[in-house]
Image (tube, rainbow, N blue to C red; front, side):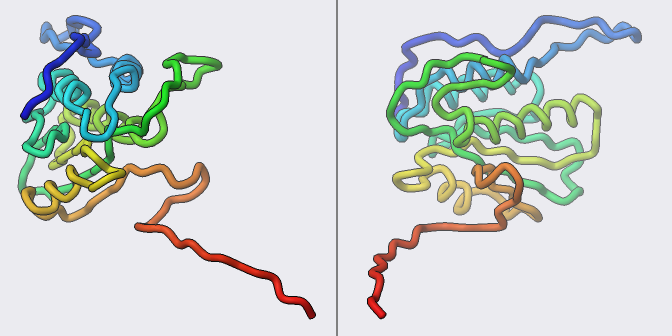
Length: 195
């Protein structure tokens, strides 16, 4: 069942830009895009407004942009399907709580700006630029749903999308390192011994 949209969000388009060769193209503002995505509430299992906004905003630039059966926002960029297929998965759901959306000292604050709307929106914006530059690419980007409770969007992608040649997961880990993989948690109880 699709959730109704309570508020209309405008896409991050700044208008038409005439190029010297006479071609007119739509411009994309990645900062406006990320800011608007962070503004849209998207608690786990309530991501519909956010996913539809992403698909609408990317549709003029992607080969295909849509919301899949899991509710995830998917954008495909296929200038050359014979190239290796790169997939990036990040999540668009957030936990409860309100952090006012604001840009302060050049940094964006708001629920989901780091975990993990920031990473998937960065990937969407990079893909738009690569496609615009007519770089040979074959990308699928997925803003997945329900990361915390069930990994619904990621599980749907695993079962329903072609296996990529390379998979990137846009989950924050640290500012100075790349996390190669992790899942789960370790809980331990430590008691000191007397000597």
